[in-house]
Amino acid sequence: MTQARSARGPPRRAPAWATGRGGGGYRVRIAHVSDCFLPRLGGIEMQVNDLTRRQAAAGHHPEVITATPGGPAGAAGADPRVPIHRSGLPIPAEIANNPFPSRPIRKVLRAGNFDAVHVHAGVGSPFAAAGLRVALDLGLPTVVTVHCLRPPFRLPLILTPWLDRRLAPGFALTAVSEAAAAPLRERTGVPVTVLPNGLDPGEWRVAAVDGASEPSAPAGAVGTTPVHAVATMRLSVRKRPLPLLKIVAAARDRLAADRSGVDLRLTVFGDGKLRPRMERYLRREGLTGAVRLAGRIDRASLLTEYAAADLFLAPAFLESFGIAALEARCAGLPVVAMSDTGVTEFVADGREGLIADGDDGMVEAIVRLATDQTLRRSIQRHNRRTEPPTAWATVLTRLDGEYARAARLAGRPAGSGRSLSH
Image 1 (cartoon, rainbow, N blue to C red):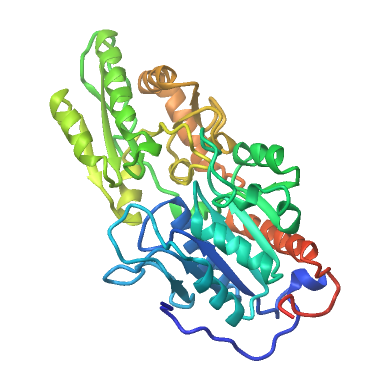
Image 2 (cartoon, one colour):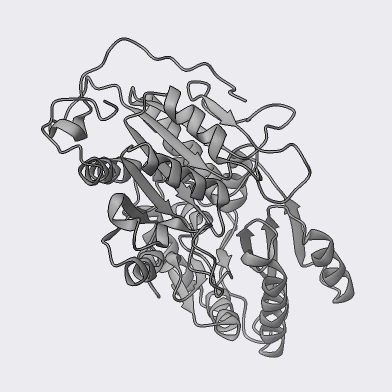
């Protein structure tokens, strides 16, 4: 189903990346293929939405082809200028689904007069996999962005055609971080560009609330200085929300045993199928007064919460980028995250936060930040005064280069003076 009518517009000149000429005046048609999209909420969904919104604002014509069914209110938060083609089955499921995705994708791509196809791949993305095969079959310039780390198990190539050495030379392969890109280069033997998730740092900039990061209590005083940790995630196994609760419980025990005078609290934002298990754990361990499961909240409310918080926790091991951690970092929060993840692309140990090697290391990092007010405030000042290298202007410029690379790989060289779709 298509939720918005496509505005084809008058005949356009060749896209800037096809002719090597920069500047405005080009109206470029881009098809984004993704298993997941709004109203489902997650990193890929929000990133594709933000990307298409900015491309539309720049005068281009992005469209989304997805297996995610629409909700009762459609796709709340989506740009009305961006047509959405949905072909998922409207059945209850944790993942988007369509057992026969190639036909609807082919229909949209054939009718759309697209200049490029941008495929967004996660872990086991059958819809994106079909989109890549169809785009290559139609000879369309194609960019694939891998939004995940390689899982510990090996998936068949039918679900991950971007890993196929026979196909990889025919499209521009990108990944959201070096942690995600390195194994792709090894597997495919082709260049893999790091194309980070975009973020407007100004949208997440907040002023500290009076009372946050209060002076440390005297040694020996128990439970007199509140330190508020926050985490934002989908409550799924991959994000490790249950281990997070155990990590915070262990950190609280350490702080109490050391008579630090710190009362560590945690608020978790987000929802998912693990919430009932988390609630049972908190009741069983007597932590309902120390940990709050706040559910899903909007961005404005999240910014208010971040302004009053002291640190952000990112416990996932399989984190290819960590957009929630980046948002928190831009809001000024010190980030505690795991090593060998995409978070380390914008969080250096001791500068934007602390990096841990495992759960025990995360306990140590939390205790250190909770008890060292000087370090905590130093990181907060740094994060509020500096911007990460993921601003949308930079990301969009880099993406234009990938569309140009895709055009060359599809046999439509720069300087041809013709539309990529002809």
